[in-house]
Image (cartoon, rainbow, N blue to C red; front, side, top):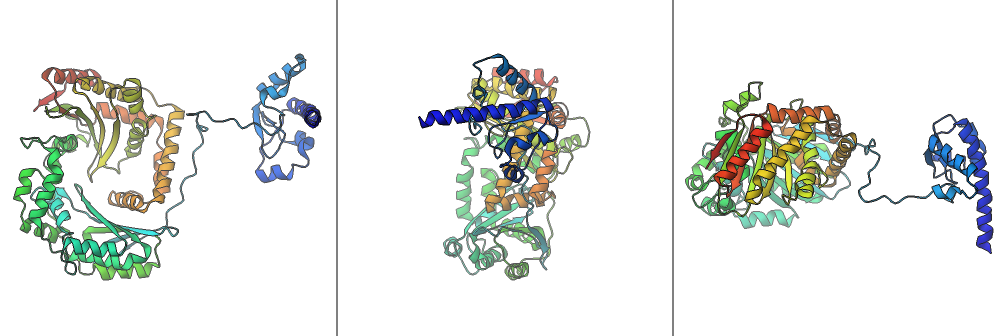
Length: 564
């Protein structure tokens, strides 16, 4: 009985709201109100609706605090049906049936395509330089519990005379210092303060990263300073065996390179692109004297950048701690000449005609699958087209809904995974697309990848697809501040590339890339940028010719083929 009375009351209220909205339709009036304005007018409800400014939308739902909007033409159709159909009821359309219905979002349904998340806040960054010349970048994140240090030495394998020397130094530098004469004692010193430490070598930089509880900052910095200024540099024989195990999977029984990433880089960069750790023969030739000479030449304070992120204290105190810890570092920096790239590719980046695209196949019958890597050489990160290039990479590979995965995985079921990514040096950016598949499928996979690039070169991507990628750009960069190691790594990368060390500025730069610019970037990759495709696998002569034919057809030019 009570429910029957409640329904009747609701029906009377619906009738009243219907009368009000009929008046509203005739006047074509509506407004957008803030939450506070909506709450303040809640008692007056619909008595003041007709005084609102004109807007081609109509409010529906009984609670002004939870407004819903319906296009005016659709509203007119609904009221027309209400007048002509005796049994018509507004609840059919979710109108006047209590609080507005909140429709469940279907899996895969999108946000408003034109809505971007709020840009992340500007980072609290300070820059300084110690008296010995070391650059310092501080990023304050006061609500966290751990501090992360990333110290970069701006020298890597391009700066060495004997291949593998920089990587060998990175290994043996942790084998002891003046106060901690062994790897075990040094490790224990870090770990007793709650610190984790690691290091890695790249082509133009060697990085040392340490994370620690905030209260352990001073003693950990002191230990790190001793490691970098007073290492014992012992244990080269032991590390030689360890590094050999590290690189063993990169070479076949004949000591030929079968790592497709290193292979592609060596094809583009020549002498500057030899494997970072060296090959097995290089390892056997490295001497302690060469390591000591490299350390003396490059591990100098003016050649270093230290990035510190976390709940930092007063700036003056932090800088004094750094001054005390790194005072013993050398201040006379005399770098060796860097290994040079082949001039044919550097000139091609300066508007010279590009070299003919190449297909390089390394036959390896010990693999169950073939590895495919397409490389396109572009200018250094500071060039105007870098933002559209990065957005193009995100169009290709920014999740399972992106172009590579949709075509290669979902539509054609040719591969388990595919990826696109960028790697940079001070002179170049190498855009790469990688996939792995059964040997006989390689021509189809290569064809599909070129087809994807061809589609992007012919047509601009849709507005909703670009908006989805831009939202993910904002979310990804906002998430950098959730982890100190990744934030410190990002800051050091930006600083070394002379790019803005601010997440908000970086987001704005990427969000400014247009669909037209992304299309032009795809056209440049296929038409003007130096291009090599490297494949490692059990590839027969016929398969190699099929792959070459696909490339010639899609690129419209002759393709150089190398079979090894």
